[in-house]
Amino acid sequence: MKRSLTNLVRQAMDCCLPPLVRDNYYFMYPFYQYWFAGSPDIAAVINFKEVVQSMNDQELASFYGQIRCRANTRPTDCSEESLLWVTDRLGEADDIHTLLDVGCGRGFCLERFARLGYVVTGCDVAKQLRSGIAPFVAGSVERLPFADNSFDVVTCFHTAEHVRNLTMALEELKRVARQHLFVIVPCQRYFRYTLDLHIHFFYSSAYFASFLGILDHECELVGGDIVYHARLSHTHR
Image (cartoon, rainbow, N blue to C red; front, side, top):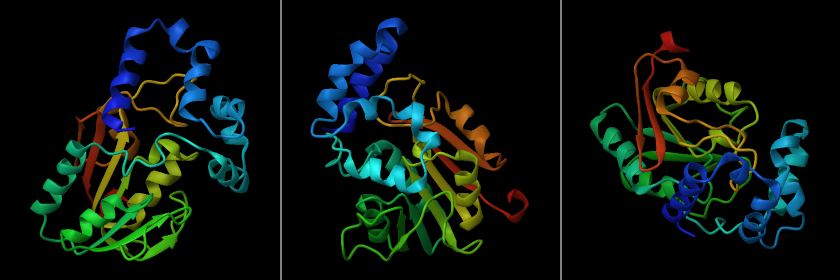
């Protein structure tokens, strides 16, 4: 199912329904059944936010490995508008040669960056990257297996909202980036019952930017996403 359609449905539910209805377990249960059809334990999915912080890495990987979701075949969670926002700014920079995409998934964004001429590398907790697109390194955004300042630019799209330790993840992204950092997250209000398994929720661009703490940045709401770009220097680390 296209993300543009699911965004419209989510916005209608989040903005139009009374909170007592929108965040009611019994109201949301049929939506979970539809969205996660084929998953072995719908109740575990519904209660994900309550238990995720007590899971170890192996338990979390096993949980995600069992999930069946109607978004699994989606090429990317990014809107086309947000990706154009990023590529426009990449095109304005003349100091970019190497690019790391953290949370690369099957490589939709990596493939686009490679076509622009960058030397690209993909990183994710498990390899889904299609063969032939780019070199792949397994690793968690909270503990990236790269030296400081390893890449001219680091991108991380629709991943930060899923990590357990947000502060550690953002510090790691800043650590391995030499010149530029791009992050995309969904603009979304917190509800206990959401169909996206998000752990963190960012209700405005200013709120998200406050987590990075970098003065030289731009952050906007584009196509339903919060898009962030920072120009890095050693003074920001």
